[in-house]
Image (cartoon, rainbow, N blue to C red; front, side, top):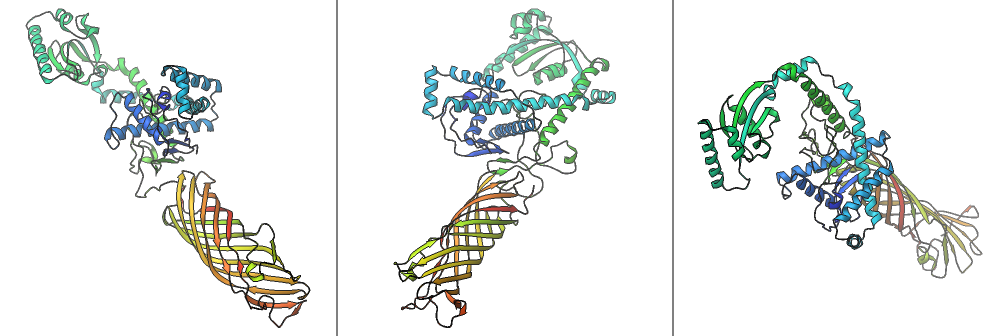
Length: 614
């Protein structure tokens, strides 16, 4: 995942001209958290806040606090737009749809110039970049990445739209049925109007005064006053006042103000009435009313139904891109659910709902806007009762993880010093030691796993030269069944940090010392021992596949294993069984030897998540 943590927060409002919407005041923030993850792309908390602010500005609304219905609507629009844009851009890559670098660079240059215009001078712009530790190249690269993603998303949407017309077949029966079921859409009224405005923030007393004035004009008009002259004198609708208030013939659906539309069609033909609308009070004169005949509107209906089918098909296709996507919002995985209207969604109830055309390239083919012009839609949801995990990297509770690992160890060369004394010279082959392990973990919950582990370690030959002329070559290995505990800390949707603690009972195997010299010719003694031990450390885990079912981790830790009081096995001298004590124990003070396998360990581990859902 490209987790862009450069501090571009202060400049994002200016990028908003093409990326997020209208410009906002400059604000410096620290990007310290990932808010939204879509496959390999992410949006930081600061970028999310900026985008939500731009959404409110684009809707001409005052920003509200998190938790309010308005804020959640804005956030869902921003999230949905980002998700759509990323998935469409990835689809463009799969379809090998390319955007020329020159086109992107041209767009970036325009954005940079627009940013500079919002500063008093170019020097002030450069000072702002320097203050935030951002170079102009950094800024251009960030804008380039976002614009390239946007352009690729629009290109693939356009290409898909070209494939849809042949799939959207509309029959004559479909047209007739729509006409019969939507009679209001084809009502027509020829009318005139006189508008007396009431400003939105007017006091009730003022609105009442305007209403009284309007009622007086209605009375005069019904009494025989000339409507055209009255409109020219009193109407505050500049478009119609000069024409004596005449609007012409309009369908109910063509009248933008729903209150006015309802009022017009409630007034009988050749009647005059008073309607309270969004702008104020309308004195409406209806000349005639009727319904458009089927033949005249059939082509319009057919085009409407064809476009509706195309839009629905396009929307289902866009939503299908979510099926194999990993989407994480505020640390919660958003599982895929079939969108309403798709065949697979019909038999079961889903929580995901689809509202107005969502943020991104709309079904009609308008450019993606990432929030500024988006309508509400619900992103989070799930089928059934299974609780989504924190990240797709984590295992569901009750699942198993099998792993295999290898390591190199930094066992020192002085662990026999207490036996031979400080006068002996000890050296060891490199690497000092190595090991292998395998285990099976069980998830108590997604972040905590316990399990059983088999640990096999081998210490390479350690040679000791004594002042008496003897040379002792020690070699040994150890095996232990262990109990393991791991704490998984997700870093993003494809990386975990793991803290591990292992402990068990270690047993020596293949322990032998070969001693040659003047006084002890060719003595070989086998030895054994056992002790409690364990290790502690951390791992950085990276997933190897999109389904997050296999991973590779880099491990670092410290193992504490020391064998005291080694036991003597068979002893030979020049190949002949030896019957008296060996040099393991026959020093003057009868000090038994010890063998220390403690030290730093560095390794690699491959994990297989056995029960994780694809």
